[in-house]
Figure 1 (tube, rainbow, N blue to C red):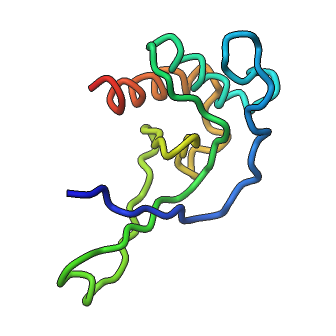
Figure 2: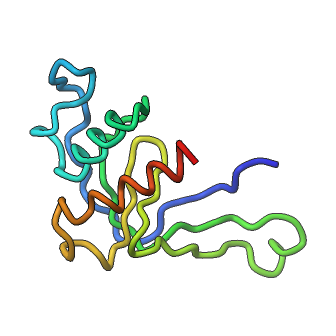
Amino acid sequence: MSEPEWEPEGKPVEETVRGDVEDGTGLPSASYLDPIVGLGNELARQLGLSQTFSSVEWQEGFVRKNRGRYATVQPTTLVPIPSDTPIFRGRSIYLAQNMQGQLSTEEWKPLIASALINRWKG
């Protein structure tokens, strides 16, 4: 069974600087990135993950392309991003658009850490 196809939905945000500046650890220097990207990279490193991030996207949700008979009735479905659960796709961290500016970087820390554990360690 293949993974469903997802496309970002909502207001696009400007991308942060791509991770081409390293701080000696092999990870992009957090000072050159969005603070949440730096936090995600630091938490991934602490958890022993090889995953690195280069951008944060604030989105309402993802459009999932439906398949089979259901696709003829409803070709796509909007799957919302939960307010308390980051989604990881490629090198991006997707966060709920309605949470933008609501939490500090430190308040995002346990949410990102638990999502990383559930995604890669679970």
